[in-house]
Length: 431
Image 1 (cartoon, rainbow, N blue to C red):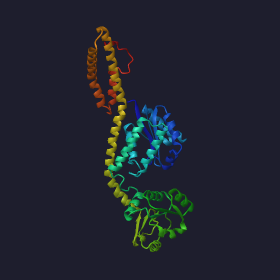
Image 2: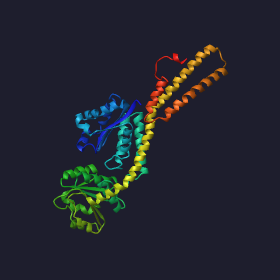
Image 3: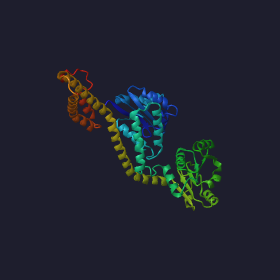
Image 4: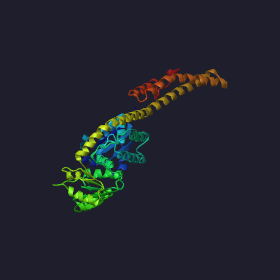
């Protein structure tokens, strides 16, 4: 096979967030980078996936070994970084392993939170940019669309995304158990740090109605509330906002608890005992443990949520095995097609070679035989065509049977040598 697929990248497992930020492609820069990607020697097609947790470059073309050597430098140059800064954090996948990796990414089997749905949407958007820029062609078109199909099958045929495997998703899972619906509920986020923000985003993704954001630095509360579509609340007005909250997320801590049992009890009286769900993500804890003894109040701390996550990881393991089987089968199917891109031209060239010889031999013998009537000429055509087809049946069948095998290239090379495909020498020895 004279072409290959190469994927080079880094992700949350191989690189710290600071480096991932440095090599990310923000909106507006991806299109021009794609143009430069396909200008690299040997690269016929290319695409770039850039998210908060990964940056990956996939390319297809001749001499995949050389392409794999060029892509790290491309990634470094695009961001004005020294190659030695980026190189230690990169991984490289070639051919079948590159395809398998892309399929696993699409199916969210390689994500920080296995089963999260956002990665598929990002993959579709960035593939569409590659296609629009003319960077993705026949091979990557089929590869990405097969990846989308795999992701859909994993989501519909397995329960890999059904159980929470992060603290934030575990909190949302528990909230859904306590409340019949979230659309008419109000959430109050105390603290604008990363873990609180992620949990709030998960709640919003599940349709929670209103979000209040409280932070000691009010400007940060304003920024995050604007980003999430919520309402900022000054820290000193926390007590006044508490009765409005159905869900309270504690993601900040201090020298003592931010919420006391007395404060929550007062809020519950104003709420007329309507249930309140509190998630304490802080260490030290932000909420007094005694709060859990109040009627209608459900308090979970970080240890409770970690226990839920641990239970669910075990349940997901069996589903992940099913998902990996779907991926492996899809890789086999794609690779047979990809390998066929070399087999088919060889078969076509083989038939053309045989037909050319057949036509020249008929013409030469007709000159010796003299004029033949239509019936005789038809019989001659039929006879010689049948001989050619029978002779080609075995080599063509062998090429097709070994299409996609590890040794497929040997069969292609043997066929080209034995039948002198691409050989410009004359056919004097064929008499």
